[in-house]
Amino acid sequence: MFKLCIFALLVLAVTANPVQRTPTMAERRLEEAGFFEGDMRFPPGRNALVNTATRWTSKTVYYQIDGAFSAAEKNTIIGALNAIQSATCVKFVARSNQANYVYVTRENSGCWSYVGMLKGRQQLNLQGNGCVYHGTAIHEFLHALGVHHQQSASDRDNYVTIQYANIQSGTEGNFDKYSSSYVTDFGIGYDYGSIMHYDAYAFSKNGQKTIVTKDSSATIGQRNGLSSKDIAKIKAMYSC
Image (cartoon, rainbow, N blue to C red; front, side, top):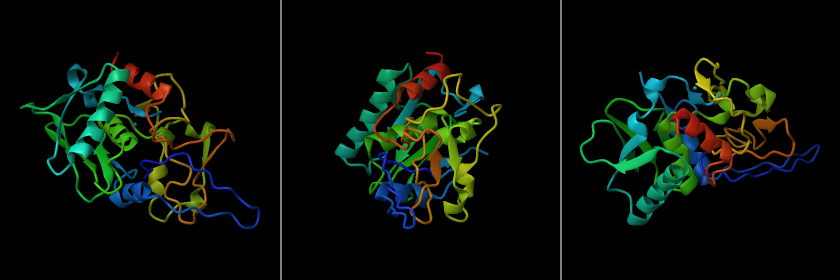
């Protein structure tokens, strides 16, 4: 999966002896989740779902945070929701008795979310040890809004090269790309700076890069906050 809470790390390569990188705890939590594309679950994707049926009605996401989270952790999650809400027209409202809502859990199963709105209660998990961070929560809630990983874009091969030889066996599916009939970028374009982009070492088996940017100056995998293109895509998706 792509990894959560990854802050633009570079591995310096020496011609004969490449420097290997150890994954952060947040990255391990994403990989341990073990779902399709690492942190995404699907109901029985450029990078937002085309199907409007998966979008939250009235541009409003109702949510409930499990009591297992500490007060500080709840504040972190709510702060992430406020960051999305303040930048877009999407609203996050604490659930009272609404039928369709996101239930945020603290289970020891990594950081993950369903993609788009389902019917009824849908789970979004932020494991306490390694997932409850501002950027990680934003990332997972963007999945809940219907946004896929950036490197799944139909045109991704114009911007990155996937190094399959460095990918852990059995996790290659995390690097699939989707057709433009399934996901769209609303004409906004590829975004190296997206909070939804995998970092360069996602699912690496040897500490070497699994994603190489074609723009050598670009960095990928930031989990600090929404990029300007992230915001533009959400606004387009929800007709802000």
